Amino acid sequence: MNENKNQTEGINAGASPLAGIVGGQGRMGRWFERFFKKAGLSVLIADKDTELSAEDIAMKCDVVVLSVPMEVFPEVVKRIGPLLPEDAFLTDLCSLKQEQVALMLRHSRCEVAGTHPLFGPSEESIKRRRVAICPGRGKRWLIWWEGLLKNSGALTHIVDPALHDRAMAWVQALNHFLCLSLGKALERDGIDLKEILALATPSFERQMGIVARLTHQDPGLYAYIQMANPYAVEALKTFSEQAESIHKIIIDNNVESFNKIFKDVQAMGRALLSYEGEGSIH
Image 1: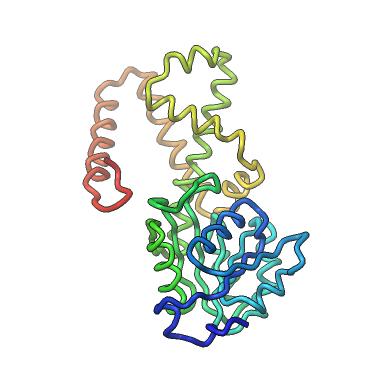
Image 2: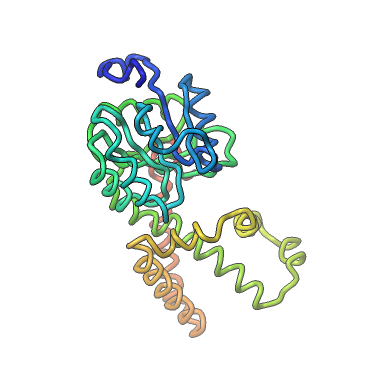
């Protein structure tokens, strides 16, 4: 065990805990291995074909990061959670948090926080990238973890796990839904994609770029984000109802109703532009 394990005050005074990543050979696992090393920490990793096991990581490390697929997450937590001592720190990198934080709390005694990097492993740096942190148990490691991320340039946001997942129903589930719907609609229409790109406005070109990047994504992960988020179905229902309402207004040539909806959204736009701070819309 790392000699800094019992230095309660040392975490915030610049001590270097030993970090461990379960699932360390995956893309996000490797990304955080590089992140920890750049921050001056020693790192151990465990994966399917490594010498160290997930259990080894739990017993050896001060900070344990779970970077595993969400479908196997419950089984991994049940296996290693009880092995972590009370003065350790357990976090995860899953895209959903309500169930994940609850599982980590249920199967461990240590300090717990959920972590959701709101970016992918293709990013070279965490600078100005958003990271959600969902408190679970304890403040000592939470303060250290947020400090480490912020000192590296991340835009951190502390949020309740349930609120996080409700927001992700819009930020992720609906966003992915829009991309898939746009792609399938273009496919069904049969229009020449070269013509679309040649005539694209900057905003539509960006949208097409997002659709194109689905090429490199895992459909299983995207399906899980859609179907495992308890708030996603209601968000998609609300969106679809609004879309159908606007569709009907256009079919009916109802300019007055269209203008009202447009002005409502303009008011929301002004509110969005008024939010201050890093990462705001301008």
